[in-house]
Amino acid sequence: MAAVLSGSIGSARSAFCRLRLLAPIDLLLLTILLVLQYFLWFGQGAWWTVFQLQGQVAAKSQVVQQLQQRNDKLAAEVLSLQNDSGAIAGLARRNLGLIGKNEIFVWVIPAKRS
Image 1: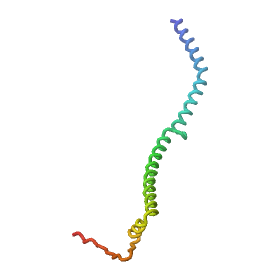
Image 2 (image 1 turned 90 degrees about the vertical axis):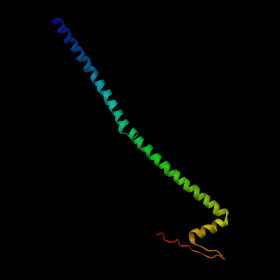
Image 3 (image 1 turned 60 degrees about the vertical axis):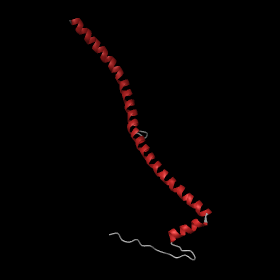
């Protein structure tokens, strides 16, 4: 039994010596791993930041699409005004209330609903 006890003490000492030699290396590797994890979770290119930026890009894309539709409508209106004099008269009647020669202005007021 004494031989087993002394053998286990000797192996414990050698394991402690090996552990003491590896501890600085392990500590260094653990530190490097934690630094890399910090940048992954909280740095400039972190996953949360990327997720938020993707949401912003989707919202901006929707706004850009709406503005593009508005611009297309305005461009069509400009082309119509450049090529058709009747379009200019229609726009003036609608927005400015203009009346042409030999025309009678009639304003119809709808009856009140009871």
